[in-house]
Length: 429
Image 1 (tube, rainbow, N blue to C red):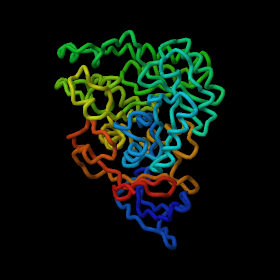
Image 2: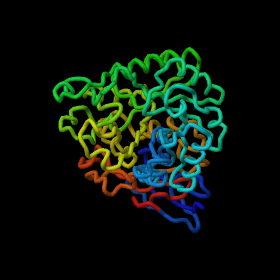
Image 3: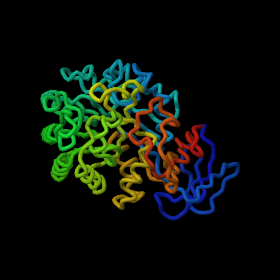
Image 4: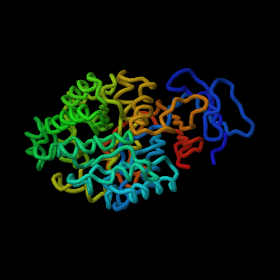
């Protein structure tokens, strides 16, 4: 049960200090000088209050890879990062391609209680790309799936992609595409460019992403359906998405924190911590992604939190797994790459990390403004401190953070899920 809390002097979306009264799972009142009998008072002087963050792209690994992450450990990490809802990707073992598996993940999330877990259903059976999965059954299940993705694999067959886009129209679903033309990326290890040539690593061309995005935008327009583009990584992709949106097509897109902060130069040391899909791109791509997030061409920041056990990363580059964890550092990375560069303000961060992701995922109880009557999903964030990232203290079971050893700004002080603290004073509750 949620208690009663008075948050004193928080800067709501970075504005003037105000109080928030949380009671019975809702924001009961906002203003100055608020008080309530029996309430716990939280001094939020200097803290920014944001709506609970929503992640459209989280790998929780359960069922099947509990050595890397579980629903419980992943949602603990999410709460530490300020998240009150995450979308759990389908590439588990077994794959989340049936009502039974998505309901299992959904129930594990409810039992853990650290944030809402919304399973993403696979588009194709076994994410093998050959036959549609049980999209309708997953949508009608207790998990009420609305986002479908074969993430980790591209739905490369245009006919199957068209059928999926047509199918989900019946329940206002969205197909989230991992844009990667498989024939153009066979054996690819990193971004194709000057650095890959210098290192002798097989290159991953930008056009492999851009060609799929262009095709799928056209397909989405043709059938009048919703397309969401996962982890956009190139300047060319940004231009295609901008064009599609200018036509009024129902296309949305996300960018990861690591693609906002890091470029392919970091790969020069051959450290597999930087091996990721899609790969880290050029400085020019990073700049384009930041500006696209700022102007709304890219709708959301999504972590693509991809935990791996130590042995999957501490090996030679070619054999290493692709992926990085990101839930516990996302807000700090966005502060550094977007707030401190003047590209976004705190209302913009709330829009890209809470409001828009919730709308894309069709989450009615998340991504709401911090006003009376809204669910009390609240993050208190201190933008002032700067600390060196140390993954050994993470709630995640995995440690494969590309930001380890970097100094990043800010920290999450408290996270409230419907008025109940999941994190308080930076500690899990």
